[in-house]
Length: 357
Image 1 (cartoon, rainbow, N blue to C red):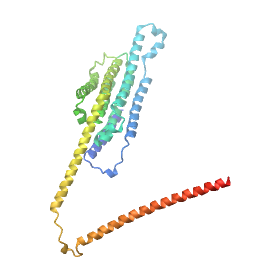
Image 2 (tube, one colour):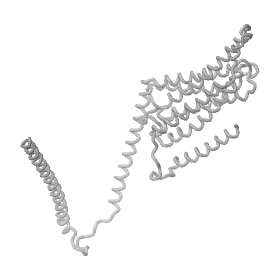
Image 3 (tube, rainbow, N blue to C red):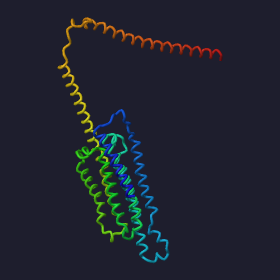
Image 4 (cartoon, rainbow, N blue to C red):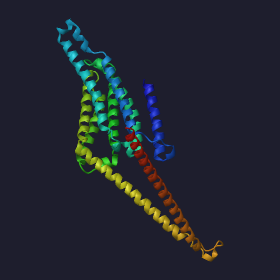
């Protein structure tokens, strides 16, 4: 499994580096590109994330649990049975809530509107958002495996500390990838420079980064003293805090202020590009006017004076325009005649019907 995970990471790195270099250096032709269907891509990748989270829930359900001890009548008379069952229940609920919090965080951080999505805003940001799902998928698989392996040790220390490390690193990478995806949609520059609600947005961003980094604190827990349910409860609490920060950041007034700033930056960038292109065209035309030589005199032409051909050219243009206007008039006249004939035929038919009646 570890070798397969490393192989997936190596393939992702190779594809990412190649795609970023090609788009960053503009080594592509627009004629050979196929436009991306933004809504279809969002839906399919969202279904992929949902599928991986569902596999984690399935792994949690089929894993061993101390709750089954409650079915033993001899166990109910002792307090240890209730203690084990309570910790196992807390472990199960924490693992399930952790996966649901990641799902909510993903769907809340990523917009489902074409106008606000990174794949429509910028090619490089859209490609980064697309490729980040590789890392997110690997991290979600790691979270599911870690939950399945830690849950049986809900009421006692985890036998293999490697699963605790897997949970800490996988949850950290998953939340980090989702936070990165959220920033990619408006862009890092617009996200930082938006003036309205900037203090609130920066504080929430720092809080999200802090809560995400705190997941790595599980690596320093005393493995021989901490029970398995504590790891799942700790990671679930931090993920819920990150989700709460995203919900606050997605308040209507805060979100509207951010996207107004993004639209203003994009409009200003387009205006600057239009002004530079127009100024460049004017400079090229002026340079051509100064460099190109003056036309020779009329007597230098072997075919005669070009001023003599000007009236003929104008007359030819007028004839063409008159011909077009005449053809249009003729077509309109034919249509009117056909309509009159149709009315006459309908009148005749109606009169014949009346006579027959």
